[in-house]
Image (cartoon, rainbow, N blue to C red; front, side):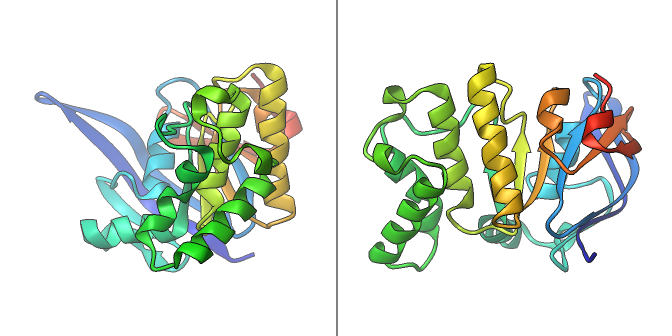
Length: 233
């Protein structure tokens, strides 16, 4: 299968005062189109940093990152922002919904940066909310929704632009078990039915079972892959 996401010799070091803190060390990684990968590892292993690099939120200290044939490490800040808006859908642990906007308005936000007409935006938002089974909640505000429903609104916002990849950082980390299971089923559906490429950071072996492949990081390096059922907590 063609690699949709390709990292070559990627390292990341943060500067804290006069001290260099290495987080990722010479990571080489190919993720095929249509894959659902979970990134696991102990705290401080570099999971979220790796996810942020793939999403174009952060830049590597060295190495190259290629997404859908575009070498994003060489893009200007403006071009990188445009790339993220077109190709990357973000799902966070704490939803990041705007409380003064309805579910519909929150989902519509990414489309306001496009050239779509108001009617086209409306159709896309309604479709995305239908996919996450919240068509009957589009006029509700975040405070009127449960945590699981808020996360589903956030997922609708992530998919409304039909992004090339979805990146999810602990998407079930703030949910009870039943709500978490609903989110995992939704992610599996997006992967299986809509063929979305998903990269998910999680510390939960149960959540990792939703993925098709688990990649483990340790001390800034890839420490191997496994099938979801083989994950060791």
